[in-house]
Image (cartoon, rainbow, N blue to C red; front, top):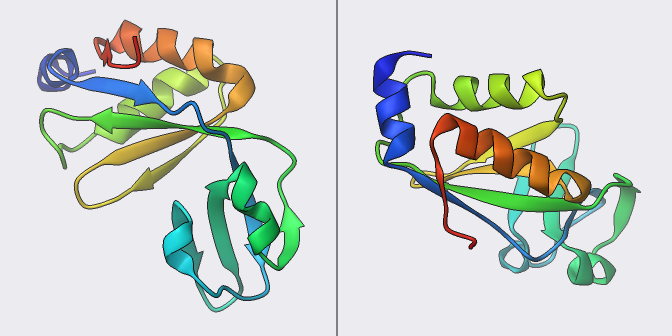
Length: 132
């Protein structure tokens, strides 16, 4: 990892949601604002939502895992290589994660069972834990 990324990670932090989320494929969506993320393409509508919101959806298929959101509070958004470095560090530890990027924040979506491992990876990269 290059020095610029290392320095940026040391000035950045993360927090992990207490809430648990599910990934689902839905037939239709009536209120997308009730959910964390909605992605639609020509093949499907995918929703990431809190577990308690699942009953509001017309679910076609559901991923069996429960997920947690890791909010990355980056000192320098849009720096090349940021997400690749984080994903690489997670992959080295055998962690499966998904990334969701918004304009002002990036999220790592992790399995609920891997919270402590992801914390260790991010702290190893230099991030501060805002969850504590």
